[in-house]
Image (cartoon, rainbow, N blue to C red; front, side, top):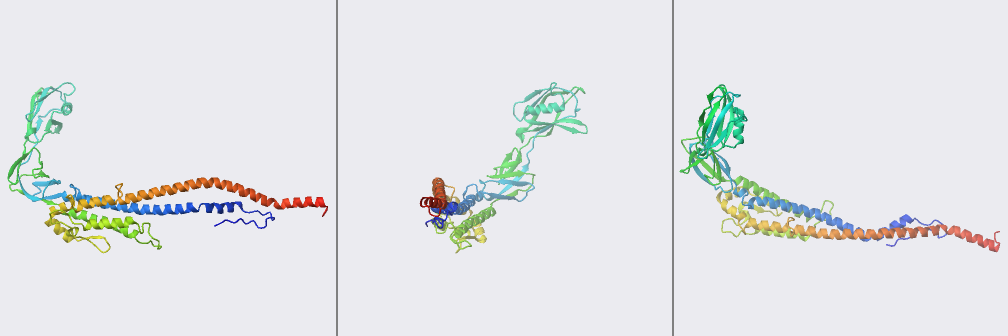
Length: 451
């Protein structure tokens, strides 16, 4: 639209408003810039929506990974003991298999200990000691001025790493030097040799065995076993047992699949999937003001919808009984969202657990195929649908912002020139009455008129 300059009569001397005229002209010059900025705003709104969808797709991938990872919830086990006061289960890793086992404890493991007779805490000691662990080589320690009391001798032994932990124990009869083997069971049996004297009392310091080192003896399903400690690993593959007491009857150990964790993981998966569908549904409609959402009509929405629907409806290739997600009680409603039937899920987990594992973890089956689909759709991969859309928008935003910057640079120079030109023209217009008066005076002077 052209810009008019309103200055009334040319001879009035009023001139015109230079600032408003320049502003109007510059607004017309910035018409392309306005369109560019409007487009950038629209693209940024799309970016926000795309980022939100990408975040929810990533959350869906995370929820799925707990089911598809080989060390995820489908591999976890839980256990129970019929006699936890005798045998307790303290762990079951992903290698454990569901089943029932019988554990009979005959003897508990013991750590070898030795202790000295009573010695005054400040008495001066002399001589030497040798300490042997099991069938190992004896290690000697000589008493001198640096270690000739019970406390300094204990510290010296601990520093020398002789295979025992030395402690000074106070009793009513005096102090004693105690040794506890650092090796459990029979292999940690302590043998104390050498000659240790109490120079203060002129008495020899002798050592007595507190308890012998002994291996635990037990059986698993009738197979006799032993352990240097009462913490027993892999006697039942993947299971850690704690032997607590001996008993005349065997404790029954039951290892079961952790179906409650699997159920929780599937609920998380359903919720994460539905969050993605909510995003897509929102973007396919209008806001509260009746305006189309930023991604309304975008092919990104249809691509995600189509590929997710196809992935969920696909059949697993394995030969097991699990072929479709619906067999786990997960079905799709008319709104495209998932729902989970707990009764169906529990029945499937209790009767076909290994097939459920294969359904999610075997190559080419549902779980691994959906992992690939989500990677191809999301923003975590540079080639994902959302990532590519964000990249394309970013390139267009950069180009438009560059256009704005370049136009502003040109308009800055143009505005200065235009202001100078219009200011000059305005000054001329404002001077016309004075010039006319000067001409009239000259005319009167020449003609003598009005003299």
